[in-house]
Structures are given as structure tokens and as C-alpha cells.
Length: 388
Picture 1 (cartoon, rainbow, N blue to C red):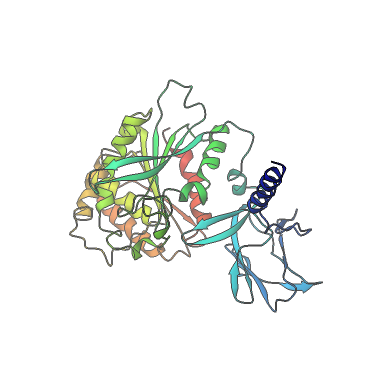
Picture 2: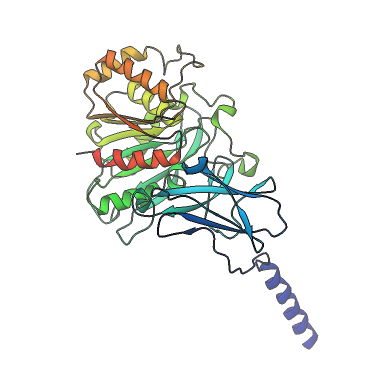
């Protein structure tokens, strides 16, 4: 009996040790460090490395910082950075990786990046503050068009469960390579809208973030394909890109949300917006269903029609559809793009078509290019204009 007890204790010790994260190593290094002057210092312990660089999505120095070695620790300090959420990776002798001492990461398409915030402006909205918080949930709806259950993410505002009232809805669409998690993870949307509502700048609203890739059930790793489907740009997925299926099937999502959630099922209380590919989706959805949405937002919209079959039902006769939509006088048609965005000229061309259709719109021009920093800030400008 005594021997059995000892054997059990030894086995339990082995199991306990097997459960430990034996890869963890305590370190005195903290990286990155956001300094009071908004410069950011990176410290990378790689004493045997020959070259270390930091590559991020800030504008200064093209987002590339060459580190210098001091006592075996590679160091780089950026110039002062505007308030934002920034992502970056470290290149050690040609090997790209996350910052070894920064536990905070996010995935963009198939790459994982380290992240940090610079306070004092837009970056404040992407962080958690002591304000009432909404709820983010993932749920599934059935699409008759694709004959599949499909995944979407829904934000409900603070006190949604307790409040007997009903709410307006913003449908927020992701770009190529994204999924139903993109706006919550990379866009920090729940934190942004929590803070905007708390400041009285935005109306309490439901935000619906569907998956815009019509051939998949949801985000990579969250479908019945499990880990066999890996994140990729949508144009690399056969049958998934600019074929109009998602756009024409969109009422399935609206009907599901109206049936499941406490919505105000009226055009005046619905908005739709999207970035890049999602901007293209937004343009087509709102044009094909002009009685469904009173607020429309295009963020760096992927409106390159050069390789699109314009005879497809979703894209056919767009100029006439815009004329009909313009006659119905949307409360807001808001278009934003950066001057360095590769889609800038395409978006300016859309303005010409809207002018010819008689559409009243607002054009917002920012600096920089096709970046999440722009799209997060566009949301901060767009959301307070909704449902007024």
C-alpha cells in the first residue's frame, strides 16, 4: 500500500511538471518602453546576434529601426510617435519574430505582431478605461445562399441585457485577409465604442462584424476545417473574391440580427461601413439595397474594378443604382482614404461617379496609406455621426 502511494505521488509530480510552462524565463528587460516624450525604446537580448532591427507600422524612419548593441542588449529608440496603437516585429539576423519580452500580440492575416500604445490622443480610445463596458460575443447564423452555418461577431452596448429598449445597428466589414475577429482584435472596436459612448460622443449601438469570405464558415481555426485552413488574403481563396455573392446575400445577416437582437429594424437606424475589401462590399451592398441603410462608410475602399466582371448582378448597372440611392437621400455617405494609399486614385474616381449620380457625400482625406492606424481613426470620426 505504501509503495502504491509513493508511485501515485511520483506520477502526480510528473504530471504536474509536464503541465508547467518550462519555457518561461524571468528577465530584467522590459521592451518596449514608451517614454514621456512619446519616443519608444526597444531592448532585445541577443548577445550572439550580428544584426537586429525593429520593423513597425509607424511613419518615422519608414518604420525601420536599426539597433545598436550595448553590453549584449540591442537597443533602438524611435523619434516621438503620434498617439496610436502600433504593431511591430523584430528581425534578428534575418529571422522575423515577435519581441521576446513583450507578451502582448495580435494576428494580422497570417503574421503575429507585438503591439504597444502611445497615449495622449487616438491611442487612448483603444485601451480599457474605467467606464461601462459592452459585451462581445461570437454567434452563428445559417446562410441559405451558401448552404452553411457562418460565424459572426456581435458587440452589444453597456446594460444591453438590463435595458428593455432597442438599439440601432452598425454593420462593420473587414478587409481582404481579415475575418469576423479583425475589427475587435486589430480595430480595438469594443474599447473604442465603449469609450465613445461613455464620453457621450456616440449613441449606444449594436455592432455586427460578419465574415466577408463567402466560401468559409469563419475565421481560420474557428471552423470545421479547424487548423487545415490557414489565414490568407481573400483573393487567394478560389471563388471568394469580388464575385458579389456576399453582397447580394447580405439581407440574410440583417434578418438574422433583427430576429435575434433588440434592434430598431428601420433604415434610419442602420449603418454599414467597411475597410478595403469591406469598403467594396459596403459600396455594393448599400447600392443594391438602398432602403436598408441610411448611413454608409467607405474606409480606404477596395474599389478597383479593373479585374471585376461588371455583368455580375451585384456590380451591374452601378451608376443607375447610385442614382436611385442618391434619390433616397442617405443621412450620411462618408468616404475616407489616405493620400499615400495605393487605392487613393480609385476612391477619387468613385467620387466622380457619385457626383454624376447626384449623391451627397462627405470626403475625408488623411495622410499615410493602407493601414489599421487610419481605419481605427476613421471609425473614431465616423461613429459619432451615426443615428443623430
